[in-house]
Length: 330
Image (tube, rainbow, N blue to C red; front, side):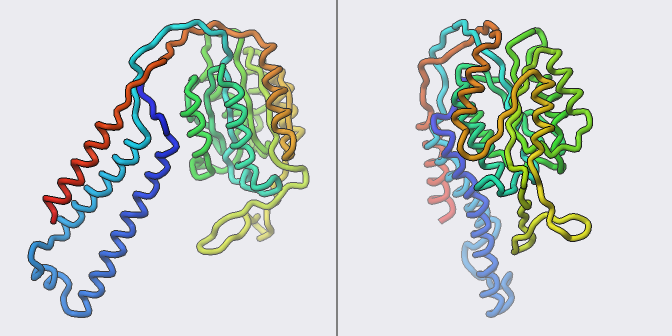
């Protein structure tokens, strides 16, 4: 089993495109400067040892070395000693709404940020269970299968945003269907779906699918994010900020559809909770208490209690690339 001891450091890899863009801009500026002196290609051919292909290869080596340095600092590890243990646990699927309406700011800083933080805190409280992740907007798709890997789940929640959803909307029914496929069909109990959404759905089959899931022993909790008064949906258009507008040009006000979420929870024999900024811990404890009353399944787990680090190998590769860049391209 492989893992990263510090997976959060991988966010530094987002700097690589920025570094490449900086190199491209610097190269363009240099060509403009040469153009003032004459034909850039002719001038570059007169520069001893210069080659555009060579420069690009050099930059690629440097960026690869930086990427390996980041991975090395994250410390790849492999489990070397394991033991098999029996554990009674539930299977829990978190279904997180990442539609554009979740960017509304009626719940500060916005619905999505509040939902992600709540989901992360809830996942931490459910570490003794197997937890999976489903993302939904106009359609739903599994982001992470059922697992005890909290670090991977936390990364999936941190990175969830509307840009991952190709279609607008909130397909609650699809999320229920996708979640059911992640559960073990051989289990007749111990299955929980926690839907975190503002309830703005255009899915007419959502309630029917929730009722079917309830008959299949899936308990559904719904977490409402937003307010009945609602809020506008901010958008970035070119270099200015605006709001999502309807056909008449008026800003669209997105509201929490609490009644719908209550109906989904009732159909799934669960409960509805509403986030209003001050009750997250109480809700998490209530969900935990309710889950503890459900019938749990016996699960055989292979746990690793000793890991071997391989950061030295990755850092050595990074150093090798830097040496190649130093002695081959200078």
